[in-house]
Image (cartoon, rainbow, N blue to C red; front, side, top):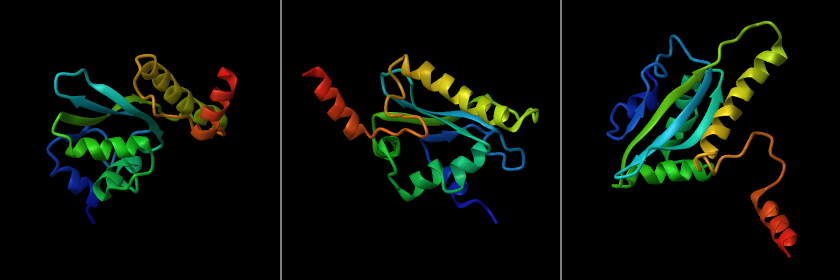
Length: 155
C-alpha cells in the first residue's frame, strides 16, 4: 500500500524532501533539518529533529502528514503550514544533517549519541538566530511561566 503523505508530497511544488529520506527500504537514523527559503533572503533553518527513522518521522503521523492535513501542533508547524501558501516562500526543504548509526556497544550511549547530535545542530542554528522557536524534549518550564519569571527578574 503506498504511503499517502509521500504521494501527496510528490504533487507539491515548493516542498522538497531529500531522496535518501524517501527511501522506505533503507531508513536513516539521524538528525534532519527543515529549511525555508524566502525570496531575496538566505535560507533559514526552522527546525532540527532526530529520529530512529527519519522516513517514519516525516511520513507516518509526522511533519509531512501534518502539513498535508494542516495540523498545527506548535509554532513550527504553524509556520510551515503558512509557508506553503506564502508566495514569498520559494522553497521548503527537509534534508539529513547527519546520519547517526547505532554502534550497539551500550543502549544508553547509543540513545545519547543521537540526542547529543540533535542538540549540536540546534545550538549551531540558534547561534545564527535560527530555530528560535525550538525547545528541547523534556522541557519543564512553559513559555508563559518563563515570561512571568523574566518579568519578575527585570523588576
